[in-house]
Image (cartoon, rainbow, N blue to C red):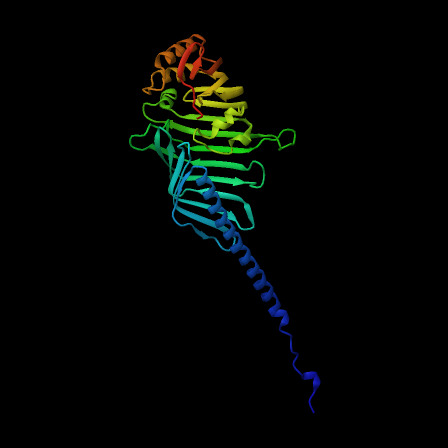
Length: 349
């Protein structure tokens, strides 16, 4: 007679298998989502490229490759070249765009092998460095957040191209985001912040002259009004239609350090003239401005009015050189310090 009390207990295996089934189902669902996401990315890339081509852009690239499973969507675009109708363009041996699969509203684009910047009528400039990247987020908003960052970039003009003002920098940073006015982001404006840290000018150029072979650091911020008119780049450039619609920069503040010279910068508004040259005025509270202006006068750059810069240096020296209030005016296509023309006004388009 068998003793029932000694019969081995059989444990159901369902409890052991169930977690694996759940994990398998979730993994299959996530994999399906990942493939759906990358397919959407590839489709949208084709749509955007075709739309730009219809608007007059010249775009070429090799076959993109999509990787990154399971947590990232990563698109590699070899031999990418983008040229706008205005003649502005960028090309790179490879561009890599990446986003988290669980948050595809923020993308980071890097150029691991550097890139080439094309300037209309000025030629090409090669840009290399320890890090060249662009990030964009909040894509569903009216204006997305945009951040461009270059870590220790170098700038090399191609043969027969016009020299670039700076040869290298420790950092270049540009931030663009919607302007918040009393908690309201619906206003047609964007806030812009720009930083150039420890830049060295090219030999014989205006930056090298103004810094006395030292370094240039600039930090500027302001607001772009009528920002929605910056949506496209036509044959005249991105600022042409914006200017025609009354676009202007407002609430400009910043700091500038050129060698031993320092200045705090303020301007209520700057705009572009019909020829694309900047117009308006900037107030500066400058320390030791004579050194920078005298260095500019000694520059070998053809863009600098050396006689005007020399006269401005003498005038700045007569002011004592310490804690001087100056006003720079952009008018008639030139940059003026008092009665002295220093150089052409910056050109937006």
